[in-house]
Structures are given as C-alpha cells and as structure tokens.
Length: 292
Image (cartoon, rainbow, N blue to C red; front, side):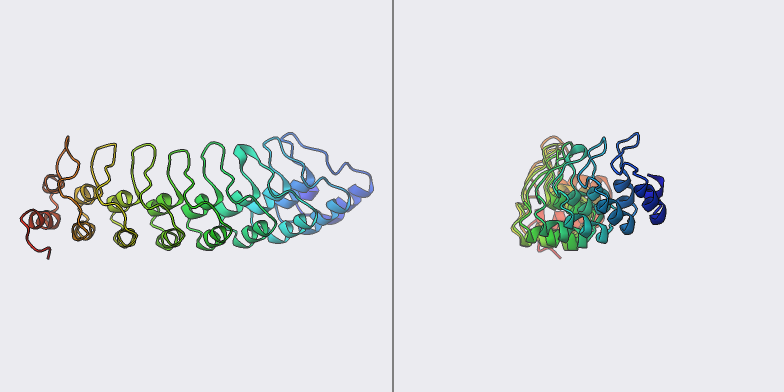
C-alpha cells in the first residue's frame, strides 16, 4: 500500500512477484490501486492492473480508483482505467460519481472522457441533490458546463433547497455560465423551495447589473415575490442601494408597489437606508417623471 501510494514502482513489482495480495484493503477499505490512482502514479496503476487488481473494488465510503483519479485530475490514469473496463457510474458516498467529482473540480479533459464513456450526466448527490452540471456551474467551470450541456444535462435540476444551476451561477456572479444556461433553455423564473427566490431576485439583491440585463432579455417575470419577506427584486435592489439595477427594473416595467404589504415599500426602504440616487429614481417613477 505505502509503496503504491508513493509511486515506488520497483518495490511494488517486487511485492507483486512475491505474491502480495493486490486487492487487500487497509482499515478504510482502500486498496493499492486506489492509492496509486489517487496520486497519479500511472506506472504503478498499470503494474497493479497487469497483476489482476480489481478495477471496480470500492472503499468503505464507496469510492473507487476511478473516482480518486477523476477527482484529482489524473487524466492518464483515468484513460487507462477506462481501457481496463472501469465502471464510470459506480456511486460512492452520497451517490457521487467520477463525473460528479471531475465536474466539481473543473477537470474538463476528464469530464469529456467520462461522457464519451457513457457516464450518467444527470446523477444527483444523495443529500445535496446537486448534479455534475450544478457543481460545475457553482464553481465557475465554463468549459465543463459546455461539455455537460452538449451531453444533454438537465439544465433545470434543483438541489435539495430547490436551487438550479442558473440560480447558483447567478449567486456566484458567473456571468458566462449564466449566458450558457439561458442559451440552453434554463427556466429563468424558477423559485427556490425555501424562500421563493428567483435568479432575478438574487441578481438584484447582489447588484449584479450585467446579469440583471441578461435575465431581462430572457423575459424574466419582474414582480415575483420573495416569500421570506414578501418583496420583489426591485425592493431588494432598492434596499441595498443598487441604483443601476433599480433603473433597469423600472425601465422594464417593475411595479413599485408590488409586495411589501407588511414592510417598507421600495421607496421607503431606500429612504430609510439613505440611498439618495435610488430614492430619486423611485420618486420620478412614482410621479410619472422620465427616468434620468
């Protein structure tokens, strides 16, 4: 195990020739093949496979040599394991797969290899609900997102909180990924399960002006209520003082009186928080004055 982990090929060869059990496990269920794959020791991996190591044997947490190599970006090891008939869709702890781990880390070459070898593109994490696409989108891995979309990844799958890849990429301000997802028919009006937030509400809250523009071009609904407070995207932007976003929303026809029945109106919250420019925009709208 130690020799394989540290890439000592000659020592591994001697041990194999001395009839060492190549499939023996350590306390956590890890084998020599997993250890070598995890650290990218391709020569050791080849030697162990030639000595009839079990390519699909799993650790106690369900992980395989393929998962370890994929997660750590060892493309040559992944290629060799695929040629050795590694199962790309074995599920590890919480139903993670090699594809899920590679997408999470942004290992694009490995994502491509796994997809070419029929990896299940829509498998979800057992507790989080996230897919490979969701993870790639969250972490800003544009090329991985492109590959997954080209392989018909479900663009609207939600995680356990009801957040889609679009919602998460908006939260993280990954504008290039937002564009990709919208181009691939992401549901622009989907609300999360917990608070009813939409992509527009999130973008307005954080002041992501360019993303707001994209969402408006995608015909987003303007006056959806954020259930937690009963307020709209306009209210969120006004509360935070994002004048450019407020201007965009008003020009698009946002209702300055929508929601906020049990709290301040957008104008009132802007005044309360001292956002002078926002106050001016909202007062002009209220008085039917042209927005400057």
